[in-house]
Length: 483
Ligand code: HEM
Image (cartoon, rainbow, N blue to C red; front, side, top):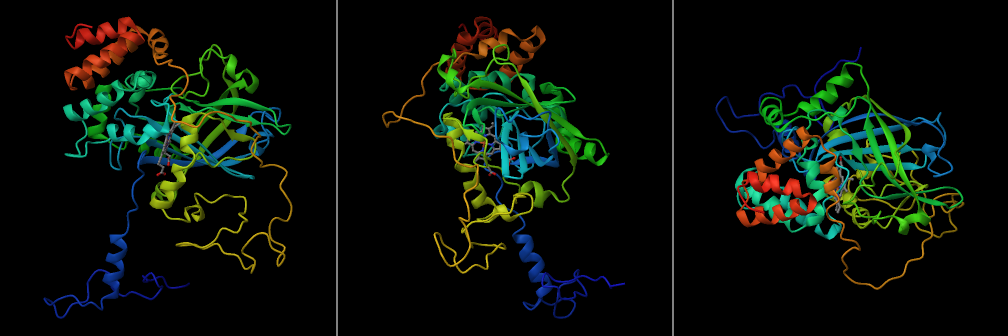
């Protein structure tokens, strides 16, 4: 049997990695202590920057299988055949929380799925709230700044945090729908097994004939939806801050699976302009009674990561990672998401982040893009350019799929407010809540809004009134302010 002993990162044997090299028992440490220098230098570099948003998360591997062929709607390889099993990696996260934050606090949960398809990686990056607070991605950094701790004292919670959040939201009435979800009990959860996932943005599916439909994605947890109230959330934040991450890990470690059903809503592309609202507006839901949910397939998560840092912290998702059969719509928020994800990953992980096993496509990569820090994939072809005649490199032949759908667009260039001012769709959600849900919503809002400055409270009351008169009156009454 080969003898096992400690080695340096270079593979040389280490006899003692617990005592530094000193001059005598009480003398200084020598700079020639390569064992200490290597160990401490690596420690100094153990962290990579946390994600700018959705920093804390947990993940699991598994697979996806469609219920039937969706070839009439999309040419996406992983949706053609009910026998086809596509491996996936899914990361759940907290949007506003930093690494080390508590899992149960009021926040948006992220739900990002990477499909390792035979035609490249497809990342479907969802949230557990079906709408977004903004209609223009240029406002995204402002939104995140308002949500995160303040830049002066870096404190989460309390009057300054409440004033900052509600100040921003009160000046963005399109956020009302989002706020009603966030401040309902949906905003506090203790398990990732029982949250829904929503694509939020409008995508396109394209079939082999070039026909397009607009799509909105949903994940339905097979165990049903569960949330907790703010009291339980606060208690768990103190006693078991990693409860959701642990619940996911322990469930899978015990041999159980975590399952979600993918569903879609569909609108034919030629009917886009006949809808009663802008279907590209991600602050609005597509009401289920008008656009029924169609079951697509099942995702089963059944394998824990072997190492959190390697596989969860360094996992990298991007809405730009699409495959033939899936296309971007002109949803402005989606358009704004195409660039920044891989941009953060080049900064956070490094230029060659796609070479890490969790991010690497299963389909072999073939192009003339090369080099950069930590590159391990390389070509032995002398013709590292295109076109060339020196090698039989690409383009050997054009693939059958992969061209984006053709689109004819015209308009004046300018910085323009998106069409439509349907800010108060949230009233629909409020009126469909039970009395208990309404009461929780109001008290959750009061818990936070009561700490904000009065002029901000007054602005918010106006928006709540316009969302639903009863909701506005209840909030005004609890704040002792006349509407
Ligand atoms: C203006 C719109 C948006 C912008 C600019 C934006 C940008 C970003 C950025 C920069 C990250 C960090 C990526 C990283 O460091 O790895 C991120 C993470 C994330 N975003 Fe967005 N985002 C937007 C909207 C959305 C929407 C609408 C959703 C949900 C449908 C969403 C879901 C997520 C999730 C789940 C993550 C974490 C992904 C992971 O697990 O690594 N974002 N976003």
